[in-house]
Image 1 (cartoon, helix red, strand yellow):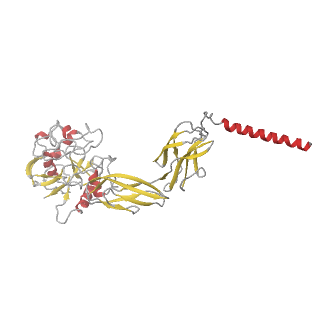
Image 2: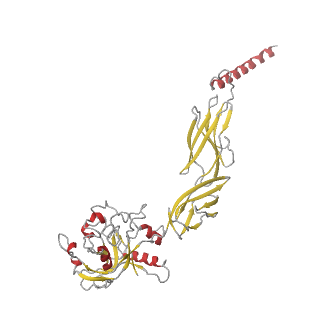
Image 3: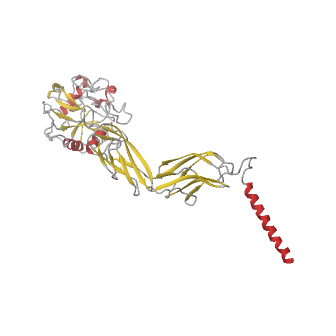
Amino acid sequence: MPMKNFSILPLFLLCATALVFSGCTIEKEPPIPEGVNNIDPVGFLSSELVLVSGKIQTTTQLSSLGNLNILHHGWVWGERMDPTLQDNTLDLGELTAQSFSTEITGLEPGRGYHLRPFVTTGMGTTYGPAHCTISGVSFTANTGTVAYLGVEVQFMNETPGNSTYSWDFGDGKTSTEVSPEHTYTGTGTKTVRLTAENNGCQVSKTLTITVLSDPFDGYMVDIPGGVFMMGCTPEQQTETGCDSDELVVREVMVAGFMMGKTEITQRQWQFIMGSNNNPSFFHQNKPDYPVEQVSWLEAKAFIDKLNQTLPAGAPLYRLPSEAEWEYAARGNQSLKYSGSTDRDSVGWSMDNSGDSTHQVSLKKKNAFGLYDMSGNVWEWVEDVYHNTYDGAPTDGSAWIDMSQTSNRVRRGGAWTADPTNCRTANRASSDPTTKNSSFGFRLARSY
């Protein structure tokens, strides 16, 4: 009997403990309304993933909170399908609202991950819709966002890992190479899509490319032949008269030729020299600004490479002679600047440039259809510099005698120059190796 009495007490204590534990669990949940059971499920309305800079930003919307407290919520993920709390877990704790957003980090670039949201109540865990993603999918093109007809574009796949790939070039052509090359045969806007597949996941990355015709199409303007007075003619004189190197004024006969209607742009330079070759100081997203920081020797190298693209027997590109340049700038008109007596209407100099070059052809063109002959950037010509015109050719050809110096002539003034230097007769010179953010050039071509 005593033994039986002794065994009743532990049993009583055990039962009491169980009642207390059970009571604590029930106290965590809200009261259940009369007539409602205790197993109304949590509902998921939607969930979204957005991959930003290697991080996954998530938004989850619940259609119902159920009728129990949500003790835990968040996301689970792993490389197997339908991950659970046994996989990687981001637990955000209790939830009282019908939506939540968070950021998932630490996913290894290039690997395929399956992800889904979850909520846990006193009745267990409910998982939301499954998602799949591959972080780090990326590619570039060696032409940037502009390509040209007939020019091979190299697409460079920068996605890490060992995915398989499919490409859609936006023109009906596809590829399964890792980093393919492609040549466009039609102009317009093309959306290039790279799709990577890894571990059952597919992720796409797009790039919009504008395909243009050859940037030299329509670039050259016909300059009719003629006779003009070269040098400091009356309308060219400043308050202090003429610069000594603009004398002696003489008659020059120029044969008809072709000249670039603008200074060579960064777009044109890169078309010939390569997309990664841009010497310009003002180069950030400025393809239609003049190329600058180009020496006379580099301008000649550009021309040599451009001429290699021409069919046999075609007239070659070249720098204009100094006489051709001044004749074209004057445009058969007696005006101080190229196209006007008002310098601001036709060019950029230190007074109106805002300390920068500008996109070509924004100002008024001259009578021959040429832009920016007064300002923007200095333009190299073929001639060797001489301090007077005494002995200079009168047939429009370049003066290349080096008896005085090896410096080459610059014409037209620039964004850094005093407005008087933008006069059509003004001259300047530099060593042929000199580069400057105000030094550029334009092309000429004989018939």
